[in-house]
Length: 106
Image 1: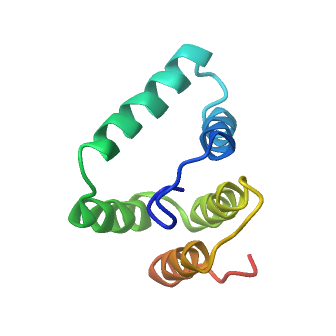
Image 2: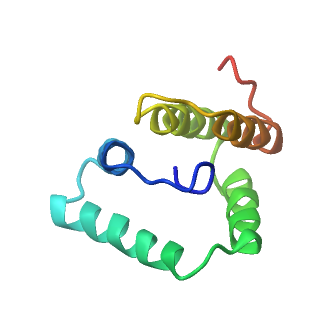
Image 3: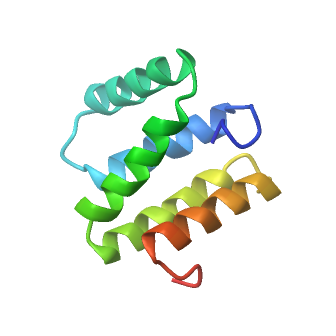
């Protein structure tokens, strides 16, 4: 949400929070907000492309294909949360689609 356009809008943070609630419906509001806050604090310490690449590969290994497809759809939702899907956001989604071997039409 931020890396592609150097802007993390309130709508994008809300979209991320909403999607986390969908993925972990039993989590409390406080738990979801703590996850979002912790991830943001790690991110502001500096972008780590190696960490990002390792995370993408770990998800490919650990998450079943149908869930990767759902995650990709959620990332598309987040990318459009601010009302604009930038070329850089589309490119990142395309790269994830290729790495995770998930067709974009899914």
